[in-house]
Amino acid sequence: MMIADRYLEKIRTAYPHLALENLELNQDGMNNDVVIVDRQLVCRFPKTEWAKKHLKNEIEILQLARQFIELPIPHLDCVADDFVSYPFIRGEALSRNLLLGLDTRIQEKVIEQLGGFYQQLHSIPSNAIADFNIPPSLAQCSREDAIELYDRVEQILFPHLWKHQRTWVIEHFEPLINGTLNLDTSTVLIHGDLGCYHILFDRDRQCLSGIIDFGTAGTGDPAIDFAALLDNHGEAVLKRMSKYYSGVEKLIDRARFRAGIVWLQWALLGVQNNEVELLLAHIGSSARDIQPIGTPW
Image (cartoon, rainbow, N blue to C red; front, side):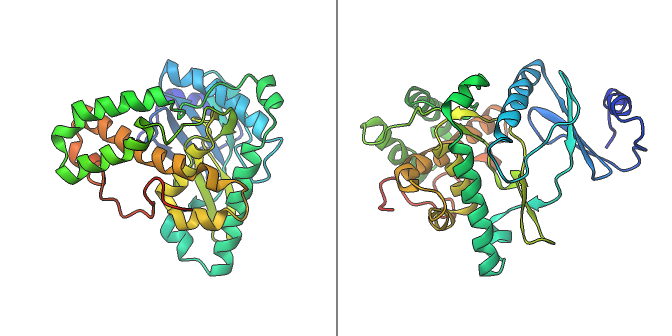
């Protein structure tokens, strides 16, 4: 895969001593292209003007979060409007299979690390967040946003769904519509996109090595971060983590709801991009370990 000359020029200008012999290009992200240099340096390039704007927010968030979080997170070295770099954090995605395949003692250590990260991130003082003028997370979703999503799902997705899938959607939104589920509008700092690929595990040291990609971070409902954990690792893992994060039981139904609407958001994107089969496959029939909203914790 060819790396754009403009990317190489910026890297050479910022790091004239680097040979640039071992380069890896990752264009999978929606907002940034990433060039990894010699497995030592990560260089990110925003794809759009919109991405440049949110990169500025991410820079502020990383500067704030680093003051309160023990786990390694990107420590920015070179910062420009259209280019940032930071030392490469070694590790691999903490998939569910990887986590549950570990020795029980190591599993517990990793789950404790995760709980500590969530607790530290969500406990950053509100005055510090205000001082850095942190905006809402891109993942934040109000009740009004969710109701609008439901209307779009009915109009656009229902014609493509089987009966049991439509029933699942209706039942999933019922607690929100009838008022038994309220979406929090708190202003804690959240990561917003804690998929397993943003949680890095070091096999040599048998522990988490870092958390990356704060591009969706901002203020919002802490249940959004737990929704990602539910989606990727399951409710049994979250229950184990509750020993290291106080108050999970108060967030669980919002996390369950938010995990479900993420599937629908991707499905809508799939329809709009003519990738229906890929993104509708798991709606209503997922094997993930997530209980229905209202199930006792």
